[in-house]
Length: 213
Image (cartoon, rainbow, N blue to C red; front, side, top):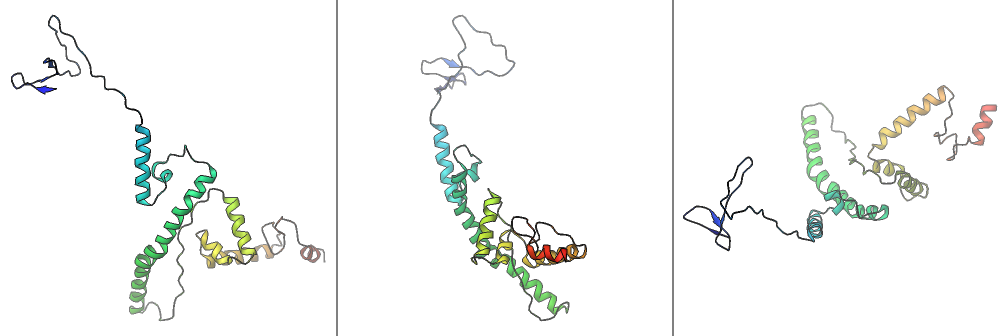
């Protein structure tokens, strides 16, 4: 296609002028003229090219392809869980080595220094624990049972297990203590009370004997 400097229009390889058409235009053709619309040939393999490009972008950002694109058509339960492991490690490292020490801790230090200088609090050390938001589980039942086994076998403390769920252990324990007092006051036994029931929800023998006594 070449540009015709005389007519101001484009010409094809045969020297015929290429006219422009717009919506609503009525075009009158001369004898022997016709209208032909462009029909570009389809190109195969673009989907594969786009996927390859997105894979490269995801790798550069430290994400999985599925998180970047939302395309879950080629994953199953096992592959999506395995693929999230490395991403979660990266997020965990970023939280512990970047966000908390470089952003959260300096803000807390400045707040504490200002409050002490204003005489609002004393110089007694204040215990501080950073609890990042928890990751949503793909299979909550299996993940919770794995943490329960870790706690029961001494591989993880209850405080760590609670923190991994995104909660403050001190707050959770205080809430448990408050609820235990209410249950004891009204002599209520529920299957989630580990003091009086087994993990299968059955009442413990000593509790049953105490109630009959």
